Amino acid sequence: DFEFYDKLELEQQKKIIKELREINKITRVEKPYRLTLLECDISVIFKATAIKKINSLRYMEPGSGEYYKIKNWVDTFMRIPFGKTETLPLSITDGVDKCHDFMENAQKTLDNAVYGLNDAKMQIMQMLGQLITNPQAIGSAIAIHGPPGTGKTSLVKEGISKILNRPFAFIALGGATDSSFLEGHGYTYEGSTWGKIVQILIDSKCMNPVIYFDELDKISDTPKGEEIAGILTHLTDTSQNNQFHDKYFAEIDFDLSKCLFIFSYNDESKVNPILKDRMYRIQTKGYNQKQKTVIANNYLLPRIREQVKFMTEDITIPDQTIQYIIENHCNKEDGVRNLKRCLEIIYTKLNLYRLMRPDTNLFQEEMSLKVQFPFTVTKDIVDKLVKKSDNGLSPSLYM
Image (tube, rainbow, N blue to C red; front, side, top):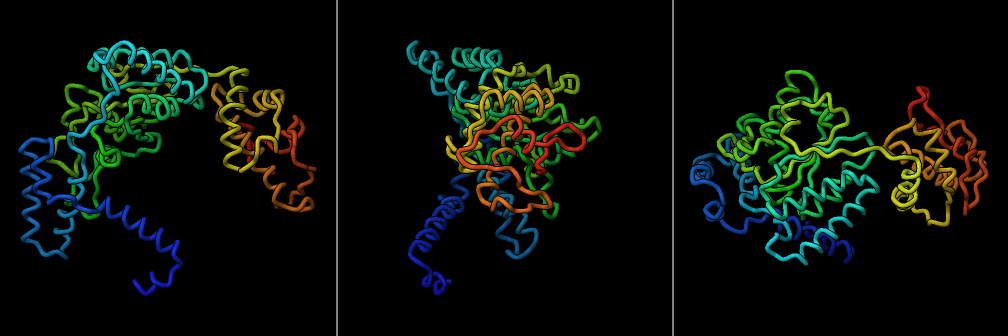
């Protein structure tokens, strides 16, 4: 290895050393496990459980399957940030001026996260006010109800999470098949692993992250789906969520009472009523055409330009063209998901004209459009670049 390393250029050597140092920080054991355990903010019973497993490794063959299972259990357990939390940047005792500054910055953060949604933002500001005056006043679960594509995820990730100074974690419930992805499998099974909740705690390096569950209404109406709903109900029950169990760490209680659980859904009728009743509910509404035009100009287009590496002056899409896209290619959606997709199609196709010869026959379609930059996108250009798929529901990437 050293001979190969010695032949590399100096910049490559520096890069390798830097990466090795970062890996070493993650994998290095700062203290012996027993000393670290004694400092953990968990009960003596759980410390004893972990010490027993550490001691049992002494009497096992290092190459055996059982040794690997217990070693993996211990290594993972030691990465769980028991007792470590991120605190709210201030409290009511810090004085009125600091509270004023915090709330003003919170409002700016929400405005930067998403455009509009003023009703939802007002509810969030009310919730923040209650958290400052009494941190125990709000439960640990929030539900955000609204149509798709209205910025619910951004509101949480770029808004609430940043204001509270907590790590953000995302869990998609739409593709969940059973509860094991949340609560893991028993460690004795070959290849078993811990669940998503514990992994989030490890990744977040604290016990109170913001955990965002997307598409709560997409949980299947089956016994497996009921299992998932049961776990979510347990997570949001303030009388029980200080004793969450992951099957991989079956003997250990995980205190999740300080986590903030946020759920999003589109169809309220498909949400478990018991689960819904436990939540502080926030409503988001759709956008009108004027609001969508502002979102396109101020939020969507700058990000798309950055992705495709176009300058602002390279491509101009006038407001009337954006409104035409909204009316004719977005299927009367309340959000801006299809609008974003249409704008991405326009930019990525125009990027082809920038990169390929004008007379190119691309997949049996001539690139017959005459494009010269700077370029203005008209309604006719939109119809040539953005075509509807056969079912007429969504824009297609096909030329």
